[in-house]
Image 1: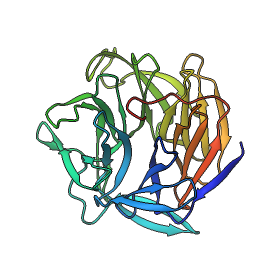
Image 2: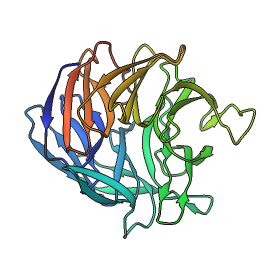
Image 3: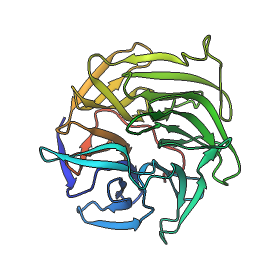
Image 4: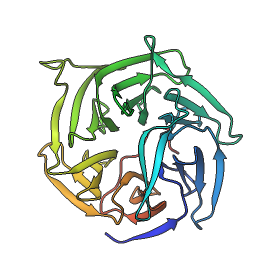
Length: 304
């Protein structure tokens, strides 16, 4: 698939959000910043929340809601910037609300039932104005914290955990809003959960084995964020063995791969008048790519 490089010099960009003026908002995890990339390639800093801003989405009030993983340690390897364990100054993960016009950062959630959020990662709003988000967990030298799949309201009052478990990364909703999909990073598959209410999913036969597998990626194809297509297919960012975007059909499990030139091709977002524009983050090399996708993406709630 043909693409152009819209911006370079970004510090591990992720969480692209298409705006109605054609610009793309991204997080720069390694700088702890939120950045707007304009269509001419120029950039503008929106906010500096610190930590590790990760997934992002526009809420019903027009603000930007950000999953902040709390920060990583970083290493440079063969010209690539690679995230590692928790940052030395890591305290907690959190969900933040950012006023795009002023850059004001407000912390909404940083704990659940007395336990800190570990590493919030990706986020999607539903039609009712609440949002689902994943907590990837956090890695330390001698242990790892687990996260899960959560649901919250943007007023900072309600936080629920729908699923407990490790390595949940990308998250998305089916076009009819009845299914939530989540990518399990190191286990290399996408799970589906039937939504039964706000922040509630149908129970699995065995709680320790949640959800149902709708796409399984072979070998060392690790999974990152995902975007939904209008058809209901899942555009899954794939890492390491086949870096790029693997479009998975949840009905059949079939996967069609679109390669991109970065071992950690982490995110995709759709926009433009016909929803065929695709912003793809090439994270280790600090680039934002722009492609014309062969089918339209799903228009997200509250993205004008």
